[in-house]
Length: 144
Image 1 (cartoon, rainbow, N blue to C red):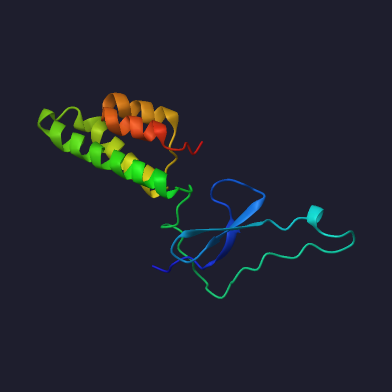
Image 2: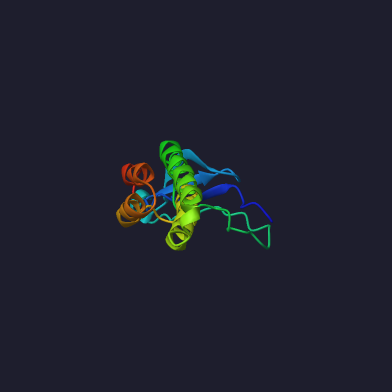
């Protein structure tokens, strides 16, 4: 598995006017304005964004789709741990596992930034999985 190339990419937080720096392992706090025609003097071409194309294959599977701040990451990790504990505790009932296992897997995806944290998922987690974990997901920043 090849790590994504370090460089400037569209801001994963969704701000289309900014570029954020990917250091090869994580998103940094470094941002810059996206080069646009509005910021260039009249008659000057827009400078291209530099992209290293020396690798023929880049695996973006481990790259988060949604930006997760450190504070939100902690809230979402605690929500995942509580979801896992609730699933294990309710395992003897068998029937709740039909929804608790998939919701716990989805909570892991929310923590890793692979799935969006939405109000609907927070409410469902609160009702069907774990009250405290659901509240933590509702307090955490929403991705959509």
